[in-house]
Image: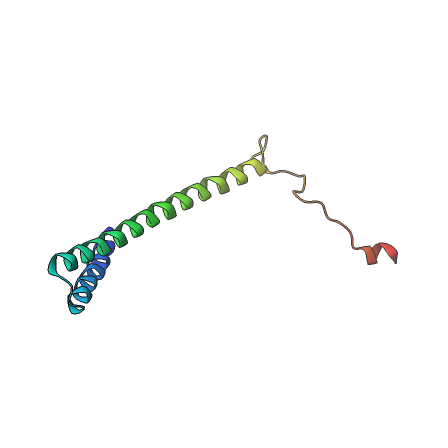
Length: 95
């Protein structure tokens, strides 16, 4: 993934550099803008990936914790008590 991030941010940096040169900007300013655009994109993609992995890892552990709490500790089977109450329909009670 990081290789893809590097290539994509390098391409964006190059495009920003060329765009600045076509707008008749000085060379040092064009280089600075291209490098800044490439690094900014790389940092955003990198931290986005880190956040995404963090969310996935913690959602998996919370899902397994929820499943484990539903098991009966004596038999390792689902507990006999339902998780939700069933409320009868008002029309069925009136009839």
